[in-house]
Length: 361
Image 1 (cartoon, rainbow, N blue to C red):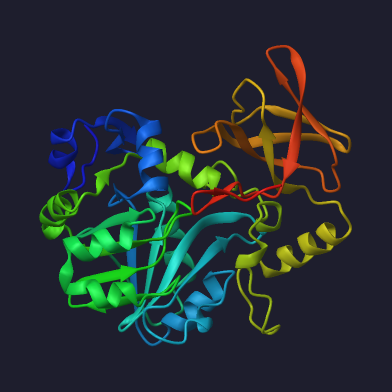
Image 2 (tube, helix red, strand yellow):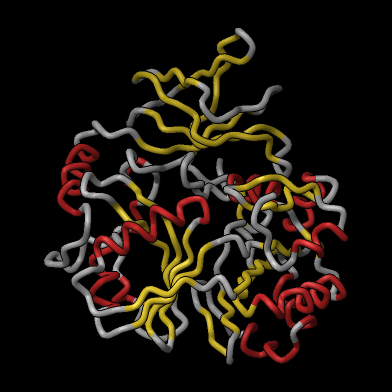
């Protein structure tokens, strides 16, 4: 038996198929993964993501520590509630983990991947020894992600006390209200919110959301939704041996101010030079419009050399297979072996669907 979130019984009652996910018993689906995917694209769904690790950073050196720890710059978060996406890098410029950082009234809050919890905490402990701060893990908190075109409407119906504040939120912004924190962040390419709040209150909130017409969604649909949106999955599209510049994460790197020293900056500078010289592979989108399904680990043959698929699946929205792949820069054509036949693929920007609509040409 694995670890269970406070909503385990609710998942069982809803008919969830439970699987082991990084040591947690989590719902992969509640019947049909494709229907759940389409529910989020067309209306609204709720994900229990309470297995994620919440870390609160307090103390006078919290800002200085995170500016050293993260490749993005939390100094950009100039008021409570603002959020940014970042990576923790190692000294060789590889990705230790990717995460969301929030500015809070008490300091900062990080939400990191559950599968990397132990190494993340050890990494932070190692590099935080000389700073005056407290890193507090918050297993007493639950996280619900509610996403889809009708998500804000349905959250307001289920939690009417937050209606006006939810409606006023911009992307990557949140607000605190007693023990609740609600932010416009997510992992689906749809509008929505993530609610971090006391785990003891999660079952009642879950019931209220379902009563408002929100449907429960498993981790299977979460993966196809994030792939359609071109969002990376740690351990697949990037890892400790992958530069963020080779994982379509350049937008999350804060090079300015030039005198900010962060872990991995020197190695990242070298990687940037390789990128400018066309020597660093990059992450692209691949489209297979014929029959077959692209899968992680498949070799890709391009006109510039070999590559590999890092994430691949059937797209319920587009009705054909898509993938993220790391291939040589400058590649103009590529093929993949589909049951013994070299099959051509289209190379596109690594984003396929946003707000329910196809976004590539």
